[in-house]
Length: 389
Image 1 (cartoon, rainbow, N blue to C red):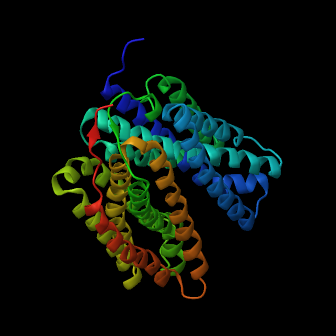
Image 2 (cartoon, rainbow, N blue to C red; image 1 turned 60 degrees about the vertical axis):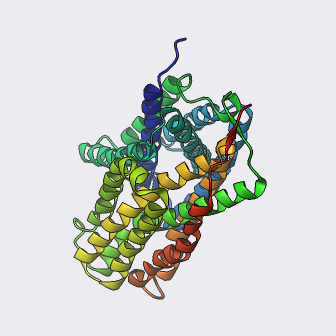
Image 3 (cartoon, rainbow, N blue to C red; image 1 turned 120 degrees about the horizontal axis):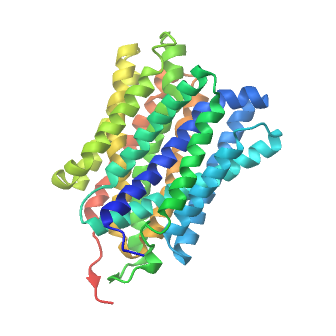
């Protein structure tokens, strides 16, 4: 079989990011339809989502184990097939116990794909010799927006949520089958330079980059979960206006990811990390400080600029600073994703009654302020010196 060019590999990995974004957005936008079909309460749905998050964390650990033994392309293919199978099985009614098990399988696939995509992105970026991680993540964001539009169209036409979810599942399987031989070989299959890394240095990389991911997903989960609720319930925005906060957020995430690969190498990773944190915090601070629809939508949009840059930057840094063990390090950094997502969704929800969502949005601001001193340690992380094998 002929060698696949790095550019073609990058496009197929980008398709993997798109499959992940398409599937995840299809699931979350299908939740109302799932509730009606299965007869689920809000409490039951919340419990399922928590279990899916735990399953995804397990999937990230699975990705680390598979990548260490066989290579990250095996982990990515396995995860995409699990995602595709899980999505396909949600398109028809099953008893609630089985439905929960199906979503847990999807969750394992979700976490496996999350981690292995970042492994693959770091590898293809190193092969290309230029920054592409932000554009790969942009494929995820664009696909998530497309999934929301597809769900809207499916429901409006009477085709039902199953059409959109099934399409996302089929796309995940297609990418898995088309990309397996073209995905980047994992670390265990690479034959180029070997690096000497101390356990202390690797742990420092995991902690610093992991906290950047934690904070980014704290902001992301807060906005994604509560922006529409805040606008409609707390600010009395019209039902047609309330989703605009989330739309503005996703739009700026997408735009920032499309340009970040050009900006980060020129501005420097540390200034961009600190700037992204500051912008994310400033957006949430605006939401918390000024209780108006315009300020909230603007604040969510500003927060998206920072989150859009911060996530690919952190994964790129982790992969480069721990080059010889990048697959394992990225899998562990990816675990911070789920911690931030849980805090952003659960803590803000818990505070919505005693203090209100307006002031609950100050929680991501506190997270940003706590992370900025830690982010400064990026200056002291240095890529190991390569030595001949």
